[in-house]
Image (tube, rainbow, N blue to C red; front, side, top):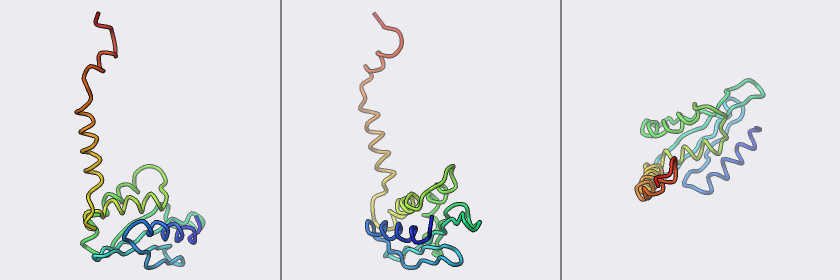
Length: 133
């Protein structure tokens, strides 16, 4: 993907959350830097398949406080399959939700799923297998 398209995607992503794209550099690293209050910063190195650059996206932060929160996004990027910039940024945002003072979406999803599983009536299981007449 052309770097200009990556920058446009990043700017559009920033309109829906507290992060701002504060720096974009194409020449050396194809790097996008993001910042949000209270002092949360990270950057994304974008793949450049045309010139033999990095194969996948890479996220990192120069802030020691932010690094542990990026583990989820780093694991996601290293998992199988190519990722888009938007998928990577969404995963980073989810990782930083606790630092931004937002509820952790993964815990909410688990609680809702767990509640749904407990509410299922057991009588549905009789439909599977041999009839009990």
